[in-house]
Image 1 (tube, rainbow, N blue to C red):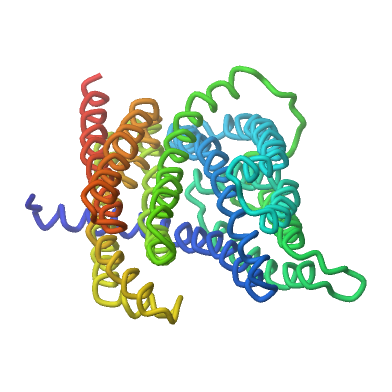
Image 2 (image 1 turned 90 degrees about the vertical axis):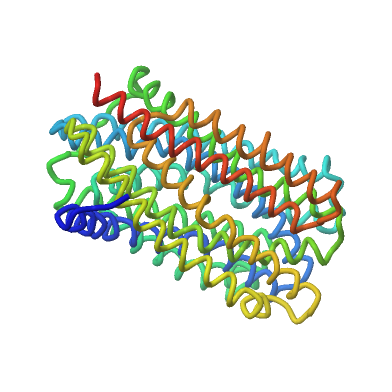
Length: 452
């Protein structure tokens, strides 16, 4: 596709705006992701049993987080469309209703986390690991309502194109977790040594402090003063909460299905032996960190598309997507080059075992293959959320990830003898299908809106 000089100028301008929105989100996402890394590093210092327990508990907690994130993702497009339509007076009431939704979601997740140790029994996890893992899960469950309320607050700010707080509060929470986690893990002064449970309590405490600080910021910041967010109390109302759920449930299912695909892949690779499992986890950790950048672009595109739709400026919708695509192609090129040329070196940071490091480096080359489809599917999904188009994308992702991606991975990895690389090829195929279908869905939907 060619562009005239004026079009290139517009693309650069739009890309600059999207980049300024996306960078704090991406860095904030990395900080949030690093909290689990801090938990893992601290647990490793305490002992191998604590490390195994926290790793297992964190995997279950991450799935619960995905559901929470998906449901709360109904807020950015709702807020950005109201803002774009000049209906800022309606933002406060809908946000106050989103807090009730967050409380409900958080309490349900808390109950699930307190019940989840039973999953460890069904999975036949060794008793010596199961006990501390269960303690970690019950302890961290107290933070579930705070997590949902924090995302309700964060997504309000992002929906209004104010993304810096995501970075500031994300980094602050990460820095706070280190001393609090250490104190509760090993004991400090009058605080007893709590082991794995201590890390769970520390994470819950930090999440509550993060939400409270964000709520105070929303109340006092000049950016939100005209919205009168906390100026009055309102009981739950069925209609606005239903509207948020109609948007959020499909997103929650889609995000959960994508996250659970990687969990299912890890479990299947577990049948191949310790070397394959360890190498898969290393490569996945690196690929997940690199994914935070296109995810930030996707979340920024959600906001920009939503604002343009609210203003009924459909050319601006197209330019927001073009800018996002331009940025994603750059970020994914850099990620692919890093994975190809530095993958083996990065894997050596994680382990001294040559076999594991070698296989992990090889898997990172396979990860490089799906950088473009992964970035494009994330971007397209974000743009569709800006259009409030979530139901069909949900079915697309379930089909692409599970019917295509996992099936291809099982066939190549287990039946064709390609082992772990076969599963990663399957992931590439599934992500490619998702990218093609979601990208096509976006442009078709925009064309239909313009004709309406």
